[in-house]
Structures are given as C-alpha cells and as structure tokens.
Length: 354
Image 1 (spheres, one colour):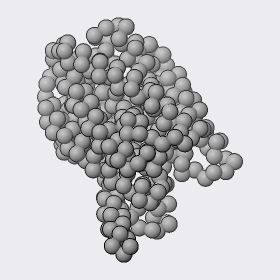
Image 2 (image 1 turned 30 degrees about the vertical axis):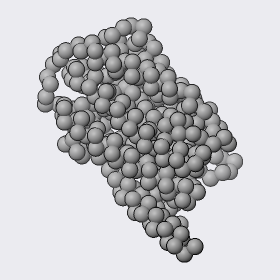
Image 3 (image 1 turned 45 degrees about the vertical axis):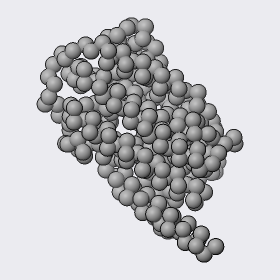
C-alpha cells in the first residue's frame, strides 16, 4: 500500500468525525448548542483533548506496530483484557451502523418525504461494498469524498451565519438531557465517544504514514480543523436556537432557508458524510471478525440488522446511544493514557540500554 502523507491523514480524521450527527448539526446541538454560548467552552476543551488522544494513539500504534483495537488501548500484555477491549470497541463500532442508517433514513425523509427505510438501506449497501474491500479502499473513499464534504459544509455554515435569520423562539432553557446535564460533562462525553470512533483509523493511518512527522502532523492539524469547523457550526446554529432544536438535521433546514438548489446539494453532501462515518466505523468492527469463510456473511447480515434497529429514529440515537458510548469511552481514554506512558518509558529504557 502507498504510504499516506499528512494531508491524507487529515482527510481521514475529518471524514471520521464529519458524519451525519456532526455535519447535520444534530450532535453539535445536543452537546453544545443547548448550553448557548457556554457551548464554545466545551468545544475548546474538546480540541485540546482530541489532540492529546490522537497523538497518544499514533505513538502507541507506531511503537507497537499495530492497529489492533485491544493493543492500542490496553497497557497490559494480557490476552484476555485485550480481547475484551477489542470486543467492546467492536460492539461500539457496530452500533454506529445503527446510527448512520437511521441518519440516512431521516435525511431522505426530511428532504423528500421518502420512507426512512429507503435512505437507511442505501447506506447499509454502500457500507458493505466498501468494507468488503480493505483499509486502502476506505482511505481512497475518504481522500476523494472528505474535501467535498468539508468545502460544502463550510459554505452552508458561512451562509447561515451571514444570513442571521434571527431567533424564532427562546434563547435559553433548552433541555440538555439527563445524560449530559452540564457543558463540561457534555463536552467530555462528545470527545469520548468520538475518540472511540477514531481508534482504528488513527492506528491504521499512523502505521501507514510516510513517517512519524506525517503521522503526528496529521493528528494535530486534523484535530484543530475539526475544532474550527465545530465552532463555526455552533455559531450558525445559535443564530436561531428554536429552529435548530426542532429538526433531526438542523443544518439541512438552514440550507433550505438559504436556497433551494443549495438545499439539494447539501442533502447530497450530507448523505456522503453519513456514508463516510458509517464506512469507517463499520470497517473498525470488521477488523475484529475472524478471517474465515463466514466473515463476509457476518458483515452483510450485521449491516442488515443494524439497518432494522436504526429505524427507531436518529434523534433518539444521538441523545442516548452516543452518550452511553461516551461514558464507556472515558474508561478507555484512561487506559490509552496509561498505555502511552508505559510505551514511552519502555522506549526510553531501551535507548538507555542500547
């Protein structure tokens, strides 16, 4: 496989996070927007934590020369612990096919009135086709798709900020939900569950990078770009808080207010964002499956089952499923930090002995 430069690695980072929840504004509203201007504080904290986590993961991956989920997180060479971590993370990754098929269904339903099952099954099929390939296929998809997603996302966000439609309802008093009652907790949960989604791709991109400089530059710049994009997204959504709160996909609604043609283009772009996140996380799930004759069958049937569960609705999934993942992810972040410091100590000791 051709080695990745830092620009390609940045595309992978942005592609992982710019999924349905993010590019649609639903995640941003749920974890930052409901707190009003205090949401900005949460985003600043998230960027710093993202940089630290991604750099630690890149270092661990290159030090151990692995993208294995369990080995990237576990600080101990314990086969049982590594397997348990890998299984839990694979389950979290699998749950994202539920979220992304739900998002695909909500998008076509909100935009065209098409039954949610149609948009969901299309995402499921595209993901299966991609994941039946390999990491190189996933990275190629991202390198082509992410620049388009990023540019159109910035365009709609900028136009929404400039249009400043004005508040159509209350500017305070929005319910953040029982699982994320304050902005510091919401920010930590947001960072935690997104970090879990990054583990496999960060590890794979680090060991496939041209060198360590490209790996770390991609991690840092990618995290900063995500932070800047989130800040702009929040600013746009706070221009009309009641409107943002009312929709499953708020930014699609803002695009419709700006221009009908732009609305249709953004719908296509957003659908691509749904696909990019679904493909990356489902790929992470697939890496934990045994390489036998049943693997392809499990990948296909797993996507189908996720699609069926996803018919429960995207808004509910963002509020509850994502938050549950975030709380689980907090434990894994602690393990990643321990793993990182143990690897640093081991490598320093090795240099001294040599």
